[in-house]
Length: 158
Image (cartoon, rainbow, N blue to C red; front, side):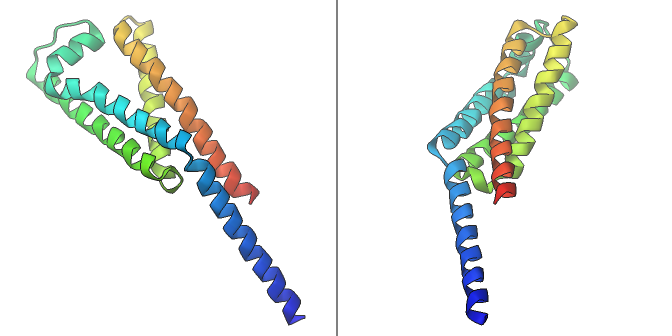
C-alpha cells in the first residue's frame, strides 16, 4: 500500500513539474518576450518626448498651446510615471511567466488610457495623434489579455 501511495505521489509531482515547465515554456516563448520588448520600446519612445519637451507633447496630443507651468509640471510628472510602465514591460520581457502582476497593471493602464482618449476624442478634446496612440494601446490590451488568459487557464487546467 505504501508503495502505491509513493507512486501516486511521484506521478503527481512529475505532472506538476511538467505542467509548470509547459506553462513557463509557452509563456516565455520568443513571441511573448518580443511582444513585451516592443511594448517597452513603444512606451518609452512615446513618453520621452513628453518628458523632455512637455509643451510640444501637449500640443501634439491636444492641438493646443499650453504654457502654464503647473500644467506642464503635471504633464511631465505623468509621463515619468508612464515611463515606469515601460520599464515594467522590459522586466516582463526577460521572463514573462514570472511577472504576471506587471502584465495585469500594464493591461489596466493601457485600457484606461485608451478609454479616456476615446472619450476625449469624441468630445474633440484630443488630436488624431492621441487617437493613434490609443489605438496602438488597444492592440497591446488585446495581446496582454491573451497572455493573462493563457496564464490563468493553464494554471487552472493543471
